[in-house]
Amino acid sequence: MTGDKKVILSGIQPSGDSITLGNYLGALNNWVKLQDEYDCLYMLADMHTLTVRQEAAKLRSRTLSLLAQYIAAGLDPDKNIMFIQSHVPAHAELAWILNCYTQMGELGRMTQFKDKSQKHADNVNAGLFDYPVLMAADILLYKADLVPVGTDQKQHVELTRDIAQRFNGIYGDVFTVPEPYIAPPSAGSKIKSLQDPTAKMSKSDPNPNGCIFMLDPPEVVVKKIKRAVTDSEAEVAYREGKDGINNLLTIYAAVTGKTVEQAANEFSDSGYGDFKAAVGEATAERLRPFQEKYRELMNNKDYLEAVYRSGAERAGRLAARTLSKVMKKVGFVPR
Ligand code: ATP
Ligand code: LTN
Image (cartoon, rainbow, N blue to C red):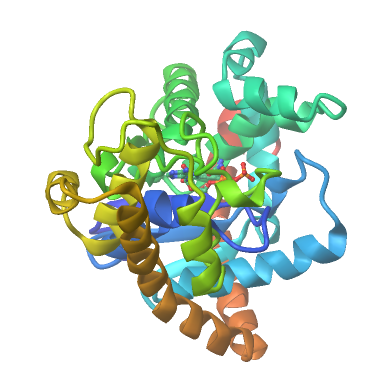
């Protein structure tokens, strides 16, 4: 971190055995493009996953696996700070303080809270409600200018801006007010479920056929796409009302680097069967190098450990600076 470049922070929750094609296209793949131009911090948001019940051993192994997936997707540990959220205690400490500058009404309006409290009606815990405040702490600790996320997280970054502005309004210029950084939809900022193309593709979807996991074997990828829900029109075209086909065209465009228009032209004379086979092949092909690199990394746990240890140290130093400034501002006695 030289201070010359703009700062980026983002994270993914280690809440599934593997990230989804949605996480990859909407988030990770864009992070890779930013690593030379910005000072980047990429976090493994393990504390956020506790908002939904997790198995301890699984959470542990999924966190390490997610780090390997970050690197397999092309993030370079020498260029980016990669760290585990729970390794930097300042996140929890700042979250507490920010809680006292956030209104219940603001949190109650969050779409993700409404969705997840319906999905997990038996466990609507305070953490689920408070999730965006922890996320605000993640972002504000590092004075991030930009937060690259998929469309579903935009509302949380906007709330972070409100909290930062409110705090700055009282105490002066403490926080950098961040901006969401969202890739264009054609690049995959909103990939939909293959089984319900009006809902987002989500790693914790109970129906595994709705979701392509980045570690799915090629034949599984091809099969899931073949089974994707479409419509009864038999015309490959991108237009309103064709959610299933629109989603497949978006996936094809994003994995091949073509535009959605080019993709639609390429298949304008094809039937759904041929179209789906081509989307399946292209997607499996895109996953191949990712999976090879992932396997290699998972055989080198010492290396992964060195990456997250050094990440925690570097992130911890930066975070401590902001936290101590905040503590001073609110009136805590210096340690
Ligand atoms: P969960 O199902 O556990 O809530 P998730 O799959 O929604 O997980 P997150 O860990 O919440 O994934 O999100 C990681 C990143 O991936 C975020 O930047 C989010 O915006 C992005 N993302 C998640 N799903 C999609 C999607 N379907 N399309 C594009 N981007 C996505
Ligand atoms: N809530 C995010 C994960 C996340 C995050 C962050 C993203 C936690 N903290 C800070 C960007 C910045 C999600 O993707 N569900």
